[in-house]
Length: 283
Ligand SMILES: [Zn+2]
Image 1 (cartoon, rainbow, N blue to C red):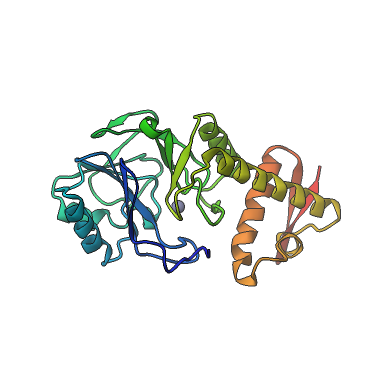
Image 2: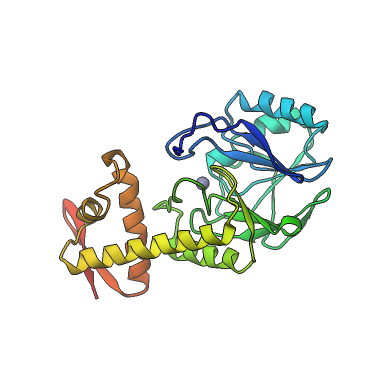
């Protein structure tokens, strides 16, 4: 199955308490598109809103009608990235007065009326409870939602199915990201509903796979530095040999996120150079 699966179902009922409507925004970063989840029995809570693709609102409306649901009770967002909150305006017009919540943190330019939701501030739904878990690393404002009824986690972009999470240079932090993975690992998660890709039935296995993957990359980077490969472009060439060159920009961002973490841990140092990439060395 490819990451951008054109046959990924546009709607689904992964459980009695969870419905899914696809954001219809497929791409390299989003896979088949952003999953938006309706959680609860007859008065569901909506998690995320897609990118604001015009075809999403009618698909969402048709899905509600099919389930016999008049409207979502409220909307909660995982984080500020466009492909998660881009649909807020259209949905606010469709459902006047609907409340929209997210962790408000270093935000500017948010759609009007979004309210703050803090770590642990339980959202009581109809037959389902959502507990926001602050999980920075991919984005500083990132929330996962823990649903005790199913021991399930709505993981946003912390954990995806079919790709690895990007740690953006600006707002990302790999050290925090790994702490966030360890935090959700302690919850006793069974199933994971990711914001991109299909449901993950083996939650603990996936979390461990994600941690192992980052640890492997870290070892590869340390080995490359040990062998005298000392700039990000060279490190990318050495350890991402099997990744298409089109993705090397993202690979460079990922290597940089590792180097910043290692620098914070005082295991590497960098030296900037005029008109050339920085040189990194082991300490
Ligand atoms: Zn994101």
